[in-house]
Length: 501
Image (cartoon, rainbow, N blue to C red; front, side):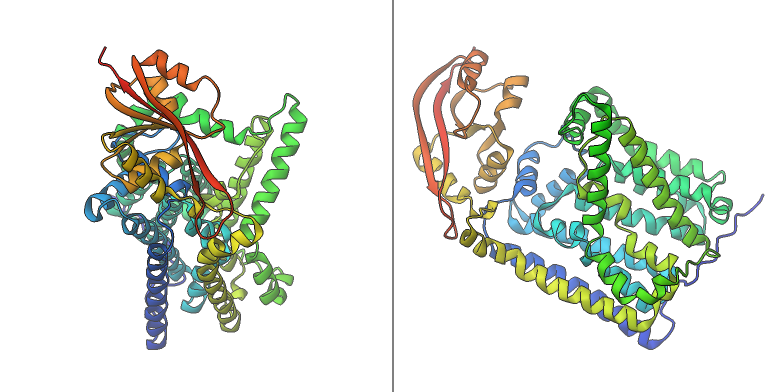
């Protein structure tokens, strides 16, 4: 019986000195304090939910194995937090910030296996310099936050497996892959990139690819079976929306689509790594100018292969002519590790003075983010800009409760509205108009239909054709935006009684 020997990593993850240990403790405490402060700040701001928050408040009304274009893992976790803490802002914000802290911590632990302590701290702090992570993830993302967390945990598990390729670590890697795919489907691209990159690098291939890979694959398959069964029966629901988003602006001309797709990809990459590349380029300009790539390191070659494979995969996708629109946040699983990859590929960047300056820049960005998140709510009205925190959903909920106290079912045309109203009044069952018309769930008694003024004409006739009803009252509701923002939020409503068939 042969035993696979692990690959030697530059560092074992343990501080080399008391000063290193103190630096690690201080950094982890600062990270925890930063995300705790984010939770407190969210609790002090508007009770109106943003788009992704409202989605979670809406979908967890029913636990399912899948939710249209989204896999179910985030909704399951959010349901657990709502069960523990109630339908509250704390439950929403604490889950997101726990996942973000876990992302940073996982990146730090991976970096500690490959880099000195000061460089590992600089790499982890650099996540704040990536707008999709430092800003967008706090502003309003949910599934993408979980996706990045699962990718970071999987990368950590991969390097742990390299160091000691035992059965337990293969099983853990398979578990994380299975869960990662259920966080967001483009995790498959990241997992495939790791698998191919490990095959390209001889030292990694010799350690990773043995009979125990079957164990990782088996665990991943078992974890995926429940959602996989749902996906097999709802493949169109799960893919059509995403493909439509990626094909926005799609024309009949192949070259036009390919050209637009490549332009979008370039813009997405540049926006993802700005301001990171500016700061790295300035602070490490001498080291980068020498192009001092550590070609002898299998880990540097792994990251080079990983990014090359992911980029080639995107190019192949664009060459189909079916994809003409790419958002920077879609690159999260492919590019969250860029700070780590750059430091591993260019080890001369790990000089203590460069690392300290990177840390100072990251601290400055953290302060800016903490100020900008609430600031945009109060400054926006000065420039005529509305954010969703301005939407008076608490007032709308109270107005509906006063006007229709006997109504416990509301049908609306927007998930933002449905999620916010259920969040404000958990006893209120909210449904989406398009889903009601498509699925015809059983409804009876008093129901309020609430739609935006720009709803497509004929929606009431379509609802009337689906359910036997009597219209009791029609009208509109107008409420002024919050925080001094100009204008009104308006809805048309219809109060009906649905008769039992």
